[in-house]
Amino acid sequence: MAIGRRERVRAWFDAQLRPDGEGRTGLGSVLAAALRASGYGAVGAGFGILALYTIPIAVLVGFLSLLGAGRFLVHPTMQWVRMLAGLERRRLLRLGHDVESPYAGPDAELPRSLREVRADPSARRDLQWVFLHGTWGLIIGAILINMPFVAVRDATYPLWWAFAPSSEQQILSGMIEAQTAPAAALGFATGIAVCALWLLFGPKLLDLQARPGVNLLGPDPDIDLSERVARLTATRAAALDAHAVELRRIERALHDGAQNRIVAVAVLVGAAKREVPRDPDKAVEILGRAQDTVEDALAELRAVVRSILPPVLEDRGLAGALNALASDCPVPCTVAVDVPGRCPASVEATAYFVVAESLTNVAKHSRAANASVEVTRRGNTLTVAVVDDGRGGADAGAGSGLAGITRRVEALDGTATVTSPPGGPTEIRVELPCGS
Image (cartoon, rainbow, N blue to C red; front, side, top):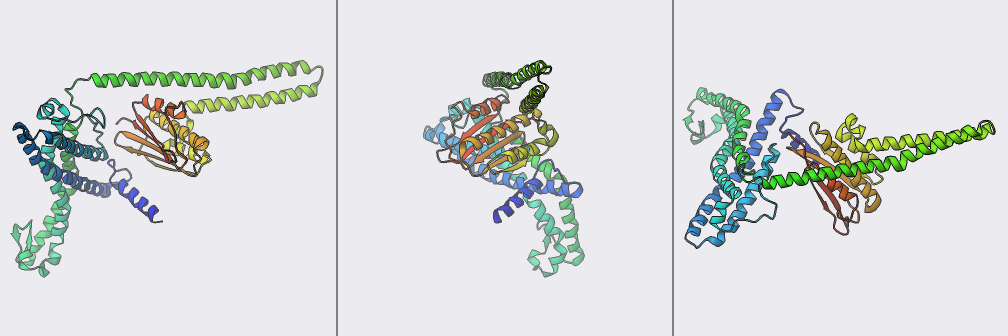
């Protein structure tokens, strides 16, 4: 019960912090946007404090490196800077800014000298962001944190002015001391004014705080694009391979299933035609078998059509389609979908295929007692996670359905990871770019 209550509270909180403000109108939407700005501004201010303490350390390490005594400190310092920049990218993703990491991968080599720092545009841009966020970002974060508290304090000032000692009878951050009750009423007016400024300009201040990270923490626009070209080439090859595999699957399904049954229908109808003058009862029996075969062929054709683009996706959306898959799974399965709006059709179809193939593997191979499906969209990334408590040991490279999942995801420039230690649990996590 406690876990369910925490999940409901977390879901409500996430809904209030959702960037699009879906489901809220009027003053509620404005208030939710201001609260969201102060909340994320506070997180940004925390990163700003870390960046502020990093600035003198980076300057000291640079000075010692020039003297030849601090070269060994460059690598850990840049490791810390990169980790701090990664935290900011995660915050920006929650704000709806999908800032791509400029590094070659999680194990990308870190600079070990000032010369390498100067030669690495990503390292230079990370340091620029540290200096900006440790000053500009921290100031804006402090303003966003203080505005709602100042608004409440000043608006309620006339209520507690008479009970406060003379040293505390000040408003406007201690600049004006109220000696009389009418002067204390000025606090209410200033509180309302600060509240209005917070409601109107809080989200804009949050955007200003995030702007350096959006501009500096992504790939340098002036770097050589050969790596991106290679990645796009690989993605195009994966898309063509996935298309060819899908065509072969459809051709095999039609040839081995529906086509054979239609040929059988033709044979049965011919046999019935020959039996009509000799044995009408037998002809009727043969026609009944032909009708059953036709129905089987139609069922197989419908299955092939559903495997290309399931109509349930169009009719009920991604959440409804995944719930239908979970209800058909012999293993008890829970589904949680947090996807505001609709994604592109190709992305929804791929997510559906991933869940369908994963649940098929769970039912056939995992020996699991329970499974769960979680689909979330943060910014421009759709994340699909299928987890089961089975025996584990799944291998994506063994030519199983997991390989098909990987090919289909890579065709959309997504990533698929399979975590399945012996003894379980097994987690299949897929991230798909879904545009703006």
